[in-house]
Length: 39
Image (cartoon, rainbow, N blue to C red; front, side, top):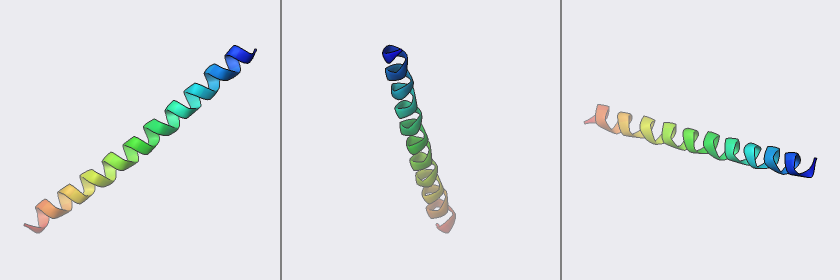
């Protein structure tokens, strides 16, 4: 049981990290498109 809990915890942490990375990349992409459109 403990192993399964540890695995679930690691998976949850990985998902959170992925979501944060996606949000960061999305915001970076938006800033990039905006600056390109301005010029």
